[in-house]
Image 1: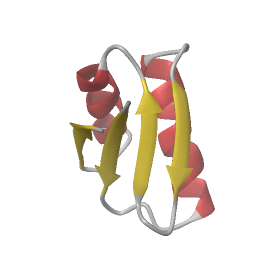
Image 2: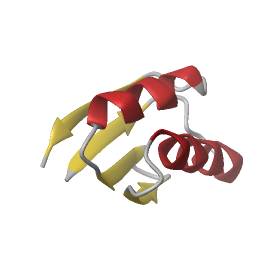
Image 3: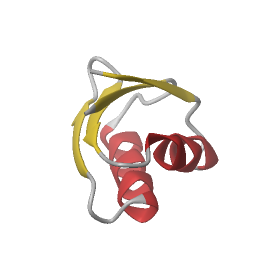
Image 4: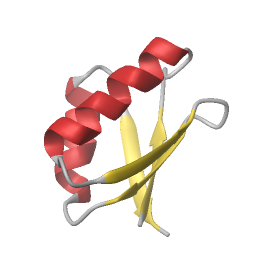
Length: 66
């Protein structure tokens, strides 16, 4: 499980865009988006690919294993 800190995620549309980016990068990923905390908890085997996808969607991010 990884936690992604996502900058500039400020609304429901942003959260939806981030979730779509996660699913595009890893269709088998399980994600939980917390808009208020600006984080996403993701169960994935390739966090770097997900981080890249989130950033390509326009949201600077970083991640750590939890």
